[in-house]
Length: 235
Length: 95
Image (cartoon, rainbow over all chains, first blue to last red; front, side):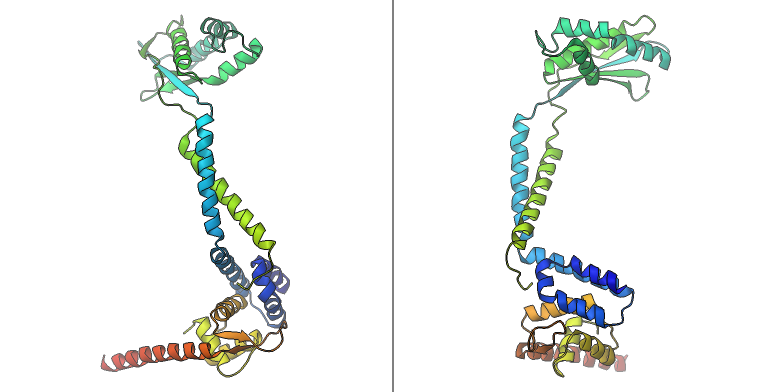
């Protein structure tokens, strides 16, 4: 137990250990101890760490860096590529389609010939894309989402993500039309794909929070490193 | 009464002591067993406030002595405690 408690003294701030660490270790070695003393030493270390951080203004440094991190994140948001999503909603005209019918319709709509036609006709990737058609098809499939349409879960939401909102709308509508014209389905478009106004990514709040968190952590680490490089002080 | 700072000041009012001796003394006169972390947390704050100071050369069994400011602080806190004790006892008698 003494060995564990001696090890726990390393949880105290370095500057505090320089001043009192030897005495505390001697006391632990000299006195008969109880298990509750382990919790007491851990609590003492936590209190001293907190005092150390507040006394030396490390939290203030972390706060400055948090603001700087949030500002950097805000600057990054202005150049961050935006992604827009357009959604076309369809509902069945009569009985809801079976899952097998939906899977077959999705396979047809996302088949290579069908998507190639959309890529070429709509110039989804520009007039002369740098990637191969296989790469474009894979990328295209990653941007498509097919979801059941609430609340009755009988309809479908077909969506497409693109950096150009007009392109997102065009492709979502083209895909919706393919589902609507599927031979073994009877679906009607109830909400044509609209021109998206707000991007779905980047989400500003999480990015700003992440920037502030990264900044505060950096500030705290830098402050601790700079404190460690200075001569120890009495806390 | 389990304020570690007050107990340490009361212990050192008798004379210089190191941590081990303080713990023994406090356990004897107050029936309170301070843990090592609590003891050194209180010693840190007391020295920081100028109420105690290391006595003699620095070593791992470092004795501490109470300062004049520490005596004044102890006196003030004991007076305050005395008022609480007297008031509490008087009210208990009346009840």
